[in-house]
Amino acid sequence: MKVGSIVTVLDIGSTKVCCCIANCLDDKRFEIVGVGYCACNGVKSGIIVDMRAVERSISKAVEHAEKMVNFRVKSVYVSISGKNVESKIVKMSINIGGRIITNDDLLNLLDNSNQEDDERAVIHSIPILYEVDSLCGIRNPLGMVGDTLNVSVNLVTAPKAQLNNLLMCLMRCHLDAIGIVSSIYASGLCVIDEDDASSNKIVIDFGGGTTSIGFFYHGIFSGMQVIPAGSKNITDDVAYGLNISPANAERLKTLHGAAFVSIRDESDTIFVPVIEDDDVINLQRIPKSSLNQIIQPRVEEILLMIKEKIVRSNFTDSFSRNVVITGGGSLLTGMRDFSGGILNKKIKIKKMGNFIDVQDIEISNNFSVAVGMIKFAQISEDYLMRNKKLSKKNKKDGLIKKTLAWIENNL
Image 1 (tube, helix red, strand yellow):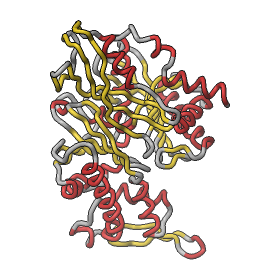
Image 2: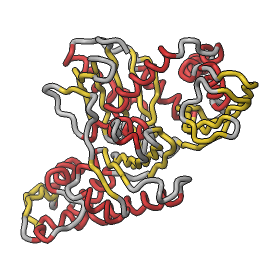
Image 3: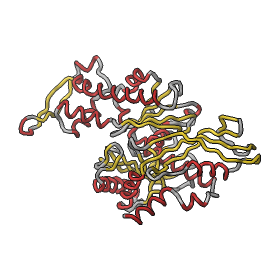
Image 4: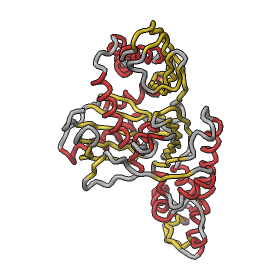
């Protein structure tokens, strides 16, 4: 990507919409110059359930980012998430005929794996490992000679209905989608740096409505799992258990909440705006343990679900002993120690990658998807520049072009 290029990303989650405008500093670094975010209404576990509410949230977030830099956003990279976004490993093969393997061979191989069905669309088609004849475990077969080229591909798909609704929301906000990114893939790009890419990693994005698990083989996105529960469930538990509003429950959780009850919690006290009779709100002093006794069971439940997903995945328990947790839920006090004990793995709570410069803008773990999407934009642009001879099929039948054409012709 050229120095000075502007890229805009839009992370649409179950609890918030985040828009980031970034400026390319060099081949590896960006500077975030504009950020806009607001509460997201109309999305449940990654699925749009109220189109108009989502449109208003998108417009508000984008407008805030535009005002920071006096820049009009026309096209964006947008995230997609939810339990219906799935990942599977498929194997493809083409005949080389004993000649040198070229870029066109790799593109043709991915074209063969990028076959959509009537109900699902391909979001990512990511090569993991290649095989040339009987030689296995090859990461880059360019320049090699062989008769047969095989590849294991991580194919990430989403329901076409979910994708169509997402793109329709953007169209109504006068935005073009130039790329669609799985949220857990983006989170992994954010928190896995060059040092981490030398080994296997499991990335857990503790989001609002869902918790996603990404498996990264030497930095390559190789699989994912999704749990339909997240930090919003914790907030709802606190609101119900203490009889307070969801807004007050979120603030209480953020300021005083912890993943587990500690010895000091019984002696420490906090003030809670309790809703009493006739909707009168009064401050009540309670021990902090009362709050964390509500939070701990839900955190433990989600972590046990994560553990089960990891055990039942295609990846063995020894795939990685290292887990990186990010997302808004990772900011809970004690999350690293508590999750490490349940998952029986070494836990890192990692923040933004070192390719981002941020000036006078506060960026925390709940922006990991947006920051990772900026890196995805760089990777995508660089890949397209290296492979300008795309197949005619890719040019004619691109995912976004096909979907937008369908919307225009049928709606």
